[in-house]
Length: 219
Image (cartoon, rainbow, N blue to C red; front, side):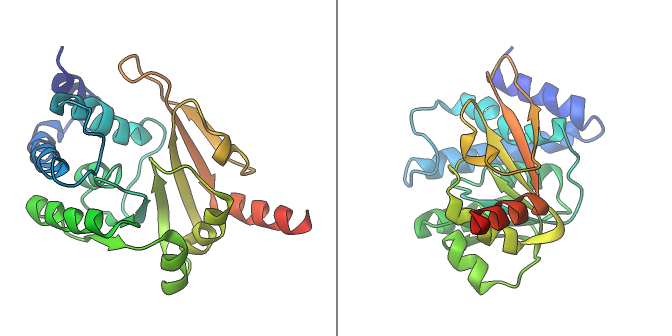
């Protein structure tokens, strides 16, 4: 079975009524992302095009094995080539998606991809997380997605500020997760697959950041 078929089977399992109509959007995303990546390094250039189906698109949708994201506002922090934000947006078009990256040329490339895919309520923002949190109103997002950034303690306060009171941060991890397991009250889900190897989804409610920041001040 080729990589696209593996991805298609995942769509059929988790989105059975819409799987066939979702595939063309992902094919267009693949073509745009692969072409742009030859000019601006958004994802690893060592990966062959077919592998995007598995290691980028399927991997991005593993969150749906442990929770159902429906509606609301999401921030994809450290989005790079739009991962996982654009795959999540494609299967949940009703979501309001903000793609945040600290590299201006990446954000500009994402503007092109958003236009090519005709995604509504989806925008790319060029900013550091800390600066974005200072500039934006607090309690803004239902979800913060993070797939490719190693967490630093300095990120936790702006994430706390940006999350709504019942908001959650969603971290995609493989073997190394010590940067987020320092947060109290997290939930860890094993979403490993034979084709991808070890994979974890770690969900941290806003309360986790509040407790972490409080404990750090007390310490």
